[in-house]
Length: 188
Image (cartoon, rainbow, N blue to C red; front, side, top):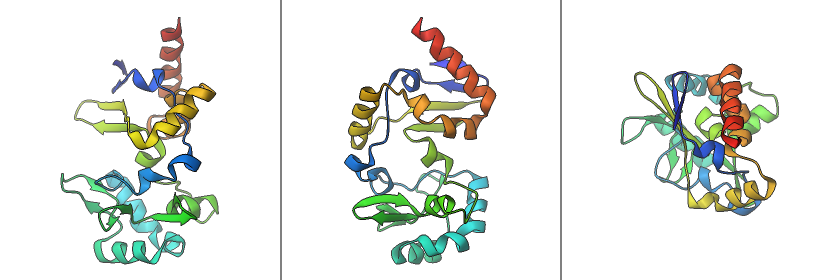
């Protein structure tokens, strides 16, 4: 672990390799697990605002859940998250064949909205936990991502490079530049 500004960062994000391999996992992170995608208070407001534009991209089951529960929910632990369909699929998930994709991201890709998706999804496999004085930035090892780890090793892409855009989105360009310096120093 090392400190960058007001973050405590796991060295795993520099040392482990990762490249999403949707052809292998079929987007399992969007349909497996026991909770929706973590959200910030700001993101809950964004979801409320963009929902009418995202709705046409969603499955009827997702729309039904969102219209019954809201565009976001409080999880069992009190954290804010996306609602789930039958305690499994994220309400915003859509399918291309058997591959789970994000309906929010599809609306973004088509220029309908200017918000890509929740930052927690964009950052995955990195998870950020906010505390009073700092944020913990950790690598989340999940067996459904074994193919992504293998592809990352094959392509020699460390986690922090794979999620560069999301890290910059979350922490800014300066923070990411400092992270790159730490990574270079660790290689020496």
